[in-house]
Length: 42
Image (cartoon, rainbow, N blue to C red; front, side, top):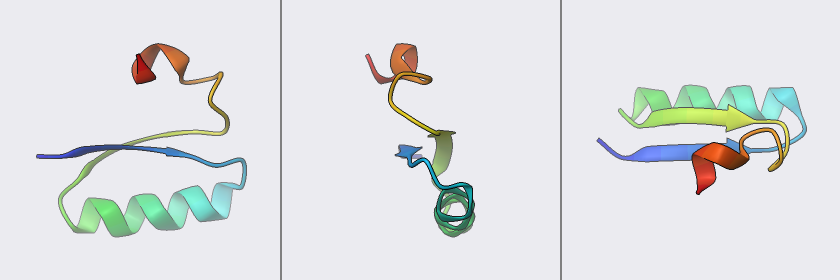
């Protein structure tokens, strides 16, 4: 299973992308900006 990190400051965009990707069987994490999810991206 592929893992995707969505980083966007707009909640509706993150929500929509997450819904689409999860439907396609991706594991999805999301963050409002790169600083909030920095440990994951290393």
